[in-house]
Amino acid sequence: MMKMKGRLLKMNAQLTSPISYSLPVGDSNISMNDLMNHPIRFSFDNEIYCIDCGKKTYKSFNQGMCYPCFQSSPLASECIIHPEKCQAHLGIGRDMEWERKYHLTPQIVYLALTAGAKVGITRKPQIPNRWIDQGAIKTIVLAETPNRYLAGMIEVSLKKVISDKTHWQKMLKNDIDHSIDLYELKQQMISYLSSDLQHYVVDDSQVTSLEFPVVEFPQKIKSLSFDKQSVIEGTLTGIKGQYLMFDTHFVLNVRKHQGYVVSM
Image 1 (tube, one colour):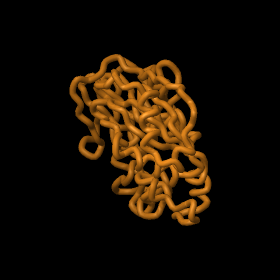
Image 2 (cartoon, helix red, strand yellow; image 1 turned 90 degrees about the vertical axis):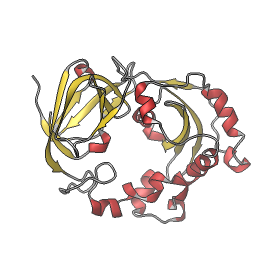
Image 3 (tube, helix red, strand yellow; image 1 turned 90 degrees about the horizontal axis):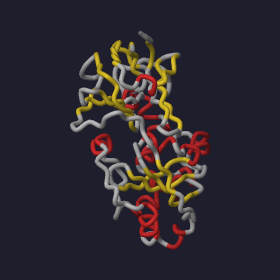
C-alpha cells in the first residue's frame, strides 16, 4: 500500500499513447497510469495554501489562490478569461515583467475536438499541455500571433460561429461528434476573419490526435469536491483532462483543488 501527504497541484502530462499522467502530492510525483484499476482514497486535511504566494487560506479562489492574490496576481487578471482585453502590448498590466514573459510572447489559436468543436488560445510552449488539460481528442493549429491581445481578437471573431467552451460532462462521457473534420473547419473559420487577422493564420494541415488512459467512460457524471466532503475514494477507471474518473461514476477535478492538503 502506498501512502503520501501534501499539497495537490494539477497533474503533469506527457503526449504518449496513451497520455502519461503524474500527480504532484507534496514532495511526491505519482504515476497515475500505474494506478489504473486500483483503489484510491483521498482525505482532505482541512488546510489550503495559495499556489501563488504560498500563504494559508481559508478558501480557494480561481483554482488555488488566496483572495489577495486573486485580486492582485497577473494569474487572475481579466485577460486570462478574456484575452481580447489584454493591454500588455500597450504597456499596461498587473505585472509587466510577468506580462512580457507570458502575454507578449507567441500565442497559438487552435481548434479542438473535445465533445464538439471549440476554439482556444494558449502560449506556444503550452502546446500540447493545454490540449491535454482540455480533454481534446484532436486539435489543429489555426493561427500564431505575437501577443495575447491579437489571439484574443481572433477568438472573439470566431466565437460568433463556434464555441470557446468545453462541454466537460460530454467530454468525460466520451460523447463526441466524430463527424467534425478539423481541417475543413479550419478553412471555414479563416473566412470569418478580417484580412488583417488572416495575416496570422498558419499554413499547416497537421491534425494532432490524443489518446487518454481510460478503462471505462462513465455514463453519468457527478463531480466531487473537498469543499463538500473530506474523503473521496474509488477505483480509478480513467483520466481525461484534469479529471480523475472513478468506478462510482464520480469525477474529481484535480486542478480545482490545487493547494489543498490531502493524504492519499
